[in-house]
Amino acid sequence: MPKEQDTPLTTDSWNLIKLIERLAFRTWPAEKTIECGDFVFRASQGITKRANSVWTSTGSPFPESNWLEQAKHFYERHTLPLLFHISNVSPPGLDKQLADAGYIVEAPCSVLTGETAIVIANTPDRDSSDDEWEITVTPHANSAWIDEFLLAEQFDASKRAFYEKVLNRIQPLKGFFSFKINGQCAAVATVVLEEGWAGITNVAVVPERRGQGIGRVLLHELALWCKDQGAHHLYLQVVQDNIPAWRLYTKAGFTPLYEYHYRREPLQS
Image 1 (cartoon, rainbow, N blue to C red):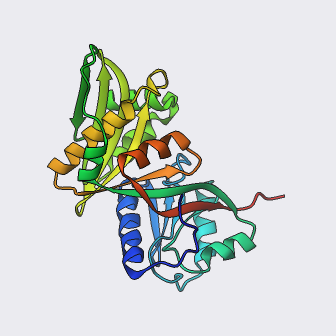
Image 2: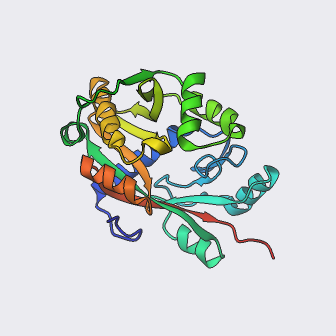
Image 3: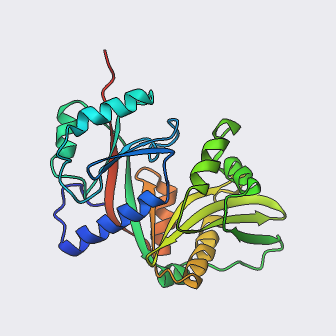
């Protein structure tokens, strides 16, 4: 299982975590950002924690300025709660400082990594089913892909504009995967490639297709595409209590590298 947050890190592990945190930051560009030293304040209408939190995974010390007051003012202006993204490469002492101030832990997650070739070897190609399977990849999140993503995630239409904007703000090379069976959406995923790494996000299988092995086939196709694009390393983020996702990814050859979580400001009495 994942390592504890305070596990001592080797220099190589620390550098790798810092790299992946930076790459992952670029897979989910917020609508509004302001830098405070090396911290980044992010706001995007309150949809998703990643796009509405203070990114602190810089590998640098605290900003010299009154960073906490600046963060409070930024999120007050956007009528959002103050939320911090905390990882192994956040400044030492930050998590404890926030905990002592009553900030609450939310959404503990782990980041898993894998070698592209190993994931390909550990996942199945399409079988000889009579069903007609079709997997397509587009370079942009077009309207049809957004429809399928909302369907697979069971999100309502009110979130459509947010996802259209955030996905099309991604700058590195990206691929939006659509998996259809007999012409009907079965699953979707996004891959973002940079510096020889591929970040896998937005993996979602429609509810009626879950438990049918679709996720493993989709991972196989994702890894093949990443190999063709020159990415030999993969990473992804998974919520720690998502047991089916853990089972899928570890069987495919992914292993835990580090953890992160969020700290939310305490409710006002």
